[in-house]
Amino acid sequence: MVVLRAGNTISADVTLYNKKRTVIRKEIAMEKHMKVPFAREEAAALRAGDYVYLTGTIYTARDAAHKRMYETLQKGGSLPFDIRGNVIYYMGPSPARQGHPIGSAGPTTASRMDKYTPALLDLGLQGMIGKGKRTEAVKQAMIRNTAVYFAAVGGAGALLSKSIICSEVIAYEDLGTEAVRRLEVKDFPVIVVMDSVGNNLYETALEEYRTE
Image (cartoon, rainbow, N blue to C red):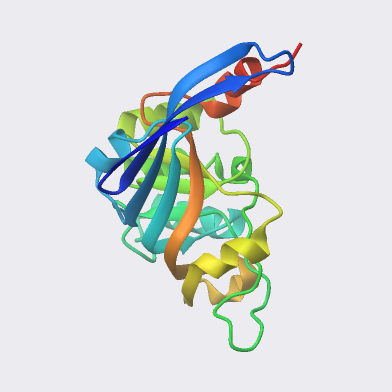
């Protein structure tokens, strides 16, 4: 493996093998450090399979919050935060321990938000963090709006919370753990699973990493 560093990007020439030591994939894997929110041009540079560490401000919203935001838009209302260029993390944390900004903060299943996501993407949502597959409608809305979908590691909520340095409820407090929160994160680890040109790691990796 050859590793090259350029600014905030690390590239690695990676060769992958199956159990019989047959080459199944050779690629340039990218590791990037990005500030959030980020511009459409930055989203366009990401590709499925890239490892990304996010630093800055992101927002949380699960299905109940998405439903309320969608209904608000349908009635001509405004969202509780400026969605343009921002990233939504599909997460509802556990209670924070004393002296900690947040409790366990693992991702929830993204498909719960699929009904509402295209409308948010059309308003300028730049990225989403969750786990699991998305619908074709979401994929097409991402391509149309040059957006990306990141996956965070499920079952690692306690570890992910260590990258969250501040948490503040900003809307829908009555929803409890599903309230909308503003998070300040530092080097929050995610992987691009769907990029802005339609590449989908959930689709391609199954065949590429299949062993005989």
